[in-house]
Amino acid sequence: MKRSAGGVFLALVFLLSVWGSAFGEMNPMVAESIATIESQLGQIPSDGGGKRIGVLVITLSNPYWTEMKKRYEEWASEMNVSVEILAAPTEGDLKSQLETLETMVVKGYDAIIVTPMDPFNLIPGVLKANGKGIPVICSGPAIDAKALKDAGGRLDGWISATFLDQGRLAAEDMVKKMGAEGGKVAIIEGIPGAGQSEARKKGAGDVFASAGNVEVVSVQPGKWDRNLAFDITTNLVKAVPDLRGIYCANDVMALAAADALETSGKREGVLIYGTDFIPEARTAIREGKLQGSTTFSQAAWTRGAIVFALKLAGRATDLPERLAIPIMLATAGNIGNFEGWK
Image (cartoon, rainbow, N blue to C red; front, side, top):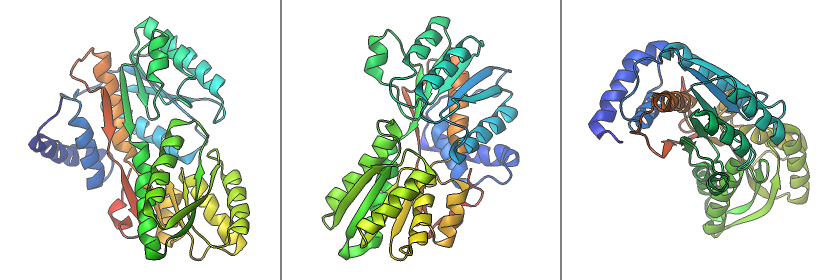
């Protein structure tokens, strides 16, 4: 179900007047993202009625996920919802993430929101939630639809940004800044096989391949790890001293790449882009340490996920198969527009 453009505008006015007080003075781009998301959800519940929602994320040791936790908790407080955010002990621990989901299933939540580490690891847990009649929303990278269906399971909803476009937007800006001269670039991906990492890598790689004057000299897995990305970059600039740019699949690795270049005395002339727009990246863009980061509003994402979960818990039928999240690129040229960004 979709609202008209006029409906989106009215929703935007409402959000700025009501939720602006909850989040301080709400950034207009955040409010617009929320309105765009809610335009896909039909009638919005006015009160959560004390519903209990479980949220399973990838890790709580990464700044991106700690910010998402804050946003979930802020909205839960405002919307009269009880929300519990859980994660596996370490990033990449597929078995522990599944075990955490299986524990969540027996807690009696009204709905569960999950972000899988890979397309397959949570399928047994989703099957158990299906058996208990608990709605499950996939948030972010997708659970493999065919494998889940073959196992006899289903998802009740999916909320996601287009991760391919995150890589694409960063690479397009990098190529533009490189100009007619072009040059050699590298990609540092996350964990191989992880949906968001693969899509961001492909989005950036497709742009570089079509540019005509850009050569991709290295694609290596940084596994979302700051130390590993630092070492990759240190070795990379030794092997490719005329490197012109690096796209990293998250900001933690991009910041590490910038640090490695500075330590090596090679920072000048190398463009570095990341994804997630974590607070440290925001500062780095202002200071010229990073050239950009692709982002979406975490406040919009988490509110959309909670509303989606509430509607599923209420057995609503006017819901999209996939709830799409708007994305954008933050750079030194537009960083002022991101004041108050959440």
